Image 1 (cartoon, rainbow, N blue to C red):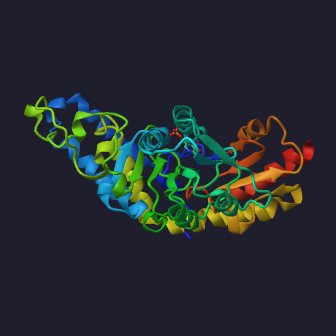
Image 2: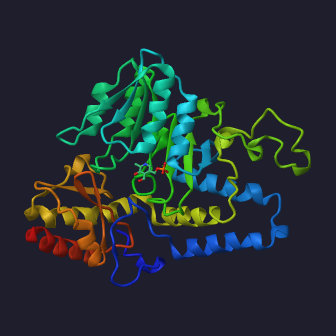
Image 3: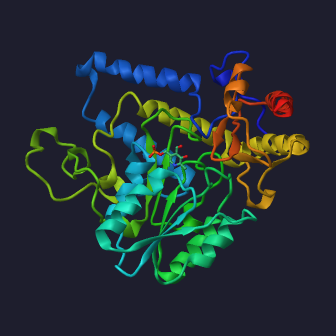
Length: 380
Ligand SMILES: Cc1ncc(COP(=O)(O)O)c(C=O)c1O
């Protein structure tokens, strides 16, 4: 278990922040690294040509350790939607085929597929909400030879349900179904092993569980997809880009691996140092340990709220770091406001109360939340 790490963040006394799935706070040292990076442009004459490459390669290497892949399989992206749109641009779906999504899937992993369906005359099949929370079995039942693409999350963002991606990946391969993953609500907080899942594309926005700044993210691209078409054509990913004097000797080739899929201006001197620091810190804590530590807090909250008629998915189907409590009665409309008035920050998503702690939280935070929930819910 990781002892409470609050001192590494700048969270004032009286704030009980249980909303990492919305947006994580930045680490103090990530802010310092980002501020120093931003200040570099005060003196652009000190920014060298190598600087356009070195930090990007460093980020690729660190992200690869989280994905368990090679650095060359990682692209640098600004958002989950950028990565998912890249996948949609590169995958084929026949007129009689379908694309598989989940009920209440996050919009960034819906709209690119709607566009592809419009273009190809194919259709979307939506996996219905399983009453027993077993999203994995519900997905496995729907995969067949007619499914060209399964575009799925790891953690279902409004239920906290966890998908068994290894099982799903294996079934997709048997049916020739391409697998595209949105890992935004899991990478960094729950172990992911790309080698065992073998997706075609897997993206994570970094501003939640990767503790990065907004507008940063990383994407895994399978080696067999690395000859594809980038969403943006940028000069820095072309194979001659290190020679700034010959950029107008236009090249048809890219740097190897997933680099061709990098966003334009990926060498962001302000943002990359902050993401690099955050990912290094996550690797120092260890993803398994983060999962165990946050899982202990959410389990405690489940136990302590049982008497309030709040239900969570069963442990075997639930992402440990991500708790969505469904109430048997409608939640009061101003619940998040009432909690915020006491310094407690959580979210309401769909009909559940979403509680997502990180290593800056402690048992005291869990106890305070339960105490205040008892008062607020009993009042209504
Ligand atoms: C499941 C999931 N995916 C992706 C995102 C972010 O998407 P984007 O980076 O496209 O804004 C969120 C944000 O809440 C999310 O919950």
